[in-house]
Image 1 (cartoon, rainbow, N blue to C red):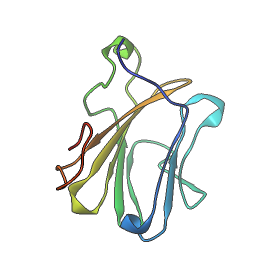
Image 2: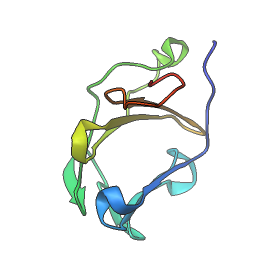
Image 3: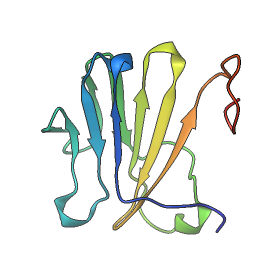
Length: 110
């Protein structure tokens, strides 16, 4: 594939009032946490500060090479309409950030 993978993602900062969301892959009892407290043990929805989270099977596959495995997808919606989709696999993850361009910003989102 042409996609990179990662072993974890942390979302934090003033956008969610200093809270910290961590998402880990499925292996080694990987967790989804808010400020270190495990949540979303199974499919469902929850929040962490100003961020809303949904965990389920719905969402676009970021890397189609993983299509044969069960889908475990976390959607984190932040204020200002920023959406982070995390596809959790057994020992790694893929993530995609969806947001509107910001004036003066460059890169893929800009």
